[in-house]
Length: 603
Image (cartoon, rainbow, N blue to C red):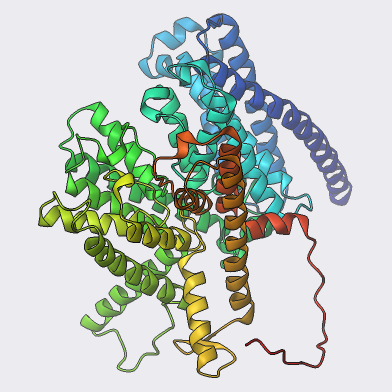
């Protein structure tokens, strides 16, 4: 009898799981469409001066809410009907919140109004917020689930930036986003510059965009600086569940290639946490440096903190940091320079330094309390990547400060006091490496300073950071390879570690390809705008290619064709030409043989 009942129970459970799977698929499709409609409705409501009938809008939102609730209920039943132990804690929490709101929505109005908490939960604004958040999570889950398809990760990475630029272009053309209408090239250029964290503009941001438009630009900077896939993958993997190994493998290739599969979710969370924490600290420091006391000052601090950490170079002031209100605020300049440096180091460096400091503190604590043995093996905590990045960063900062101080002492620095000279020289050794802020008129620079800035712009920041350029590690590896070659060695050694030959090859490929793209950009803009002098064109092209944002005041003067070239250069510089080429060229399978070697004369 017991076996008979168990067989029927298993059959019933199998039928139930199949039924729940069908229902989950049905509501998944419906809710994806509803999520798109909700996002479009929010954009339409915020972006256009129009009146939407409130009753119909709330009815649509309420229907969407209960559809989301139905999907979460089915997912909830499916999880607990299955014997596999899967981590759906995020869905359970969300389901409890949805269950409470659903019960309150179904209560009679007289009952809800009798209690303050129930009346608050029943408010339309609460329903709208929770539904919009669920729509965003749903779309993130759909994007993450689409990674199951056998798509080249490079295509997804490049496509995410391209799609974000198109969305940003459309949002910036909304009537409520601009003070006066702009054409599609102006919107596309601004969106590309924001997503690619460049800072080049062909319009005055403060005189062209409303507060809503500036917030859109700020969101594009944030999403572009960290990477749209970081956000969608983090929230999408929570929505779909942490057990999707194939998704983790693809996301690992895009955002965290050096981490293990099991660390992907924690790595994504750490990136977001570190980003928002540093930006929050930056907001406090900037707010204090300008003597903030109003909401406008807080908005200024938030905008410039995000723009500085993401190495974007956008400002809410017409003349940027050379504006009369902040032009001599050297404390502000210093904190922005520090944010730029931290953002340009790269998340792997920040993680590695954090682990190193944590190890030192832990070992010191154990030593003081007698819990550390006399001889303990010292692990190789600081990676070769961290050493190269930090050494190159310090060299570039010190040399840049010294060179700029000497070359501009009698030019742009002539009217400043000693503190102003030093801070400005330090700031201008930082900002050419993909930040794009400037504290004086770039047209007054000497030719020697311009050439030095071109070199700094070309080098850029560090890998896996918010900056661009060929990267400090690329230059560092190239220099080490030259030294090793002159010494007669066939490989690079650093701190008892050997650098892989593939890394060296990739460094020289990046240098060569970068120079080729820059040459093509210079030739095209010289053809479209022959009246512009060559030095200014080279400066502009490298600034766009390295996502810097500095200009010798020629960006608005260029033709539409040149603006399109700059748009392409900014996009290529942000996602990387090698990444774009990997989308087109199919990699060959590994060959397990080697031909006899042959030397070819080089010089």
